Image 1 (cartoon, one colour):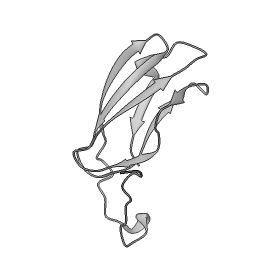
Image 2 (image 1 turned 180 degrees about the vertical axis):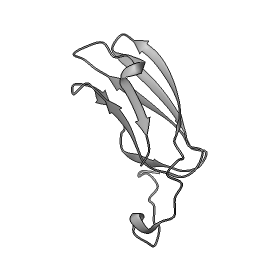
Image 3 (image 1 turned 60 degrees about the vertical axis):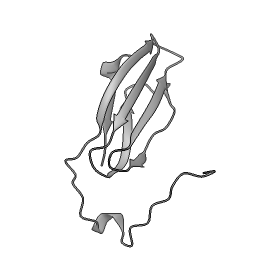
Length: 94
């Protein structure tokens, strides 16, 4: 358990048949004026889940990762320079 699980698909990602319409379910919690917690749940295997933010000073605890079907993950986003609003965060999977 020292390292996260690895993935092996036996084909290039561009050649895999995947549901591009599947997106993570996201629940946002405003923790502080400059901190938001995002709880994600994957309805299917999701490739390259990412948080898109308009602020270049925001710090994301984890970004650009895969999620297995049914997996839940909590992400913390903090912006030390300015207030952070839930509306400023877009979650998507490629």
